[in-house]
Amino acid sequence: MAYEDEEQLEALKVWWQRNGRVVIIAAVLGIASVLGWQQWGSWQARQAANAAADYQAVMGALNRADREVAINRTKQLQDTYAQSPYTVLASLAVASAEMAENQPQQAADLLAWITRSQPQSPMAAVARLRQAEALMAAGDNQAALTLLEPPASGPLAARYQELIGDLQAARGDREAAISAYRAALQRSAGQRRALVEVKLFDLGATVEETS
Image 1 (cartoon, rainbow, N blue to C red):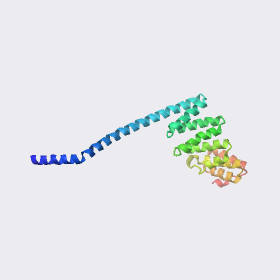
Image 2 (cartoon, rainbow, N blue to C red):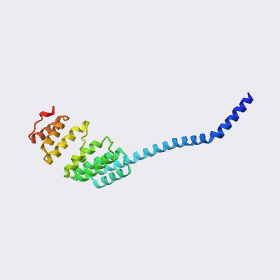
Image 3 (tube, helix red, strand yellow):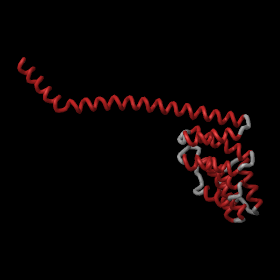
Image 4 (cartoon, helix red, strand yellow):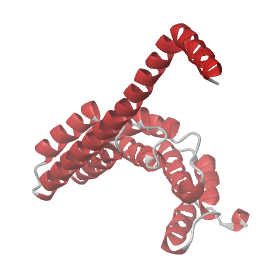
């Protein structure tokens, strides 16, 4: 038995001489990866907290009607926390304030950041619609139409088609406007549907093709 123990010990020494360095490196890398993951998680948490604080500062500035501060803080968010959902929310809020102050081009620029930098955001379709509305208000109907292609699906489909109809009507393309309004009616209900019907009637059209 003692001989077997010595033989096993000798075999272990040989194995360690051959593989010990690899084992140590693997262990060190494993520890480093755990520590690195923890540090990464802590960094992400700090980033989220900082972005949330900046978002609150933006909303506070808007509540005080201090648009300049709100715009500057939003641009800081866009530069520093480009992938944060708080940056999207701040951009949407400030763009709405700009529209309320009859500054559609500034609103469009803020919204363009969302569609460019966070195209996969759940709010990207909302931003694209509002950006097109802002461009229309700024008089750039062609850019607005281009932005709406392809139209969104889902809950915003009707609003996209209605805005396309508005833009086509503004361009004087009656048939394209009627087609878009009829497409909007297929997905509209309540007061919104009634409004689209009025727009159709204003063009001398009926709603008969919406069924």
